[in-house]
Amino acid sequence: MKIAVIGTGMVGRAFATRLTGLGHDVVLGTRDPQATLARTEPDDKGTPPLADWFVDNPEARLVTMAEAGVHGEVVINATAGANAIAALELVGAENLAGKPLLDLSLPLDLSAGWPPRLSVVNDDSLGEQIQRAFAHARVVKTLDTVQYEVMLDPTRLPGRHNMFVSGDDADAKKAVTELLGEFGWPADVVIDLGDITTARATEMYSRLLFTLSVHFGDFDTNIALVRPEK
Image (cartoon, rainbow, N blue to C red):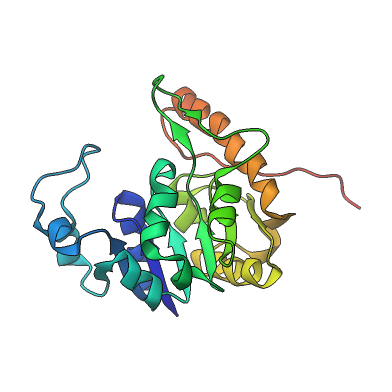
């Protein structure tokens, strides 16, 4: 499958590595490919230059945001939440139209330190904002309840644990659930919460995820639902 990953940071790179390893045709979208590849210093998070990453990951390609949108049969938003809509505007509404858009971003506000607050809560979500901004895209919110290493390899944690999908389009949720299956999430642990408004619940859970990361000193945590037997 042709997949476009929007974002070249640590998360975007991890997705590109995993997806190319699964045999997909993957591009990474960035504003200015030449400028991105010309960087020689780590970014403000300590992530090494992208050119170094490409040495070990030659199967992926770096293209402009718009070119990524044209390429992808599925588009994955792996940008920081604060930049998500602006980045997707560069991808282009016309290039997103009709395509599943897997959104894993969170509207994090780090102005008060750690754990982060959310800039969108209660009566809205970033997933909904993206769906409103790109009305013809088929947005599916998922993977926002775990850190990226667990997103891409749920066996990192012991036992059965759950993942959630939210979105207005049943076929898009099915396509994304199948992709989650390739990452190692069995279909019976993926819970369809309903339409895109249910993304409010999973995005707001992130405050607990970050608080637990402080408590345990890592992000190796997820939700395992316990329900009565029927």
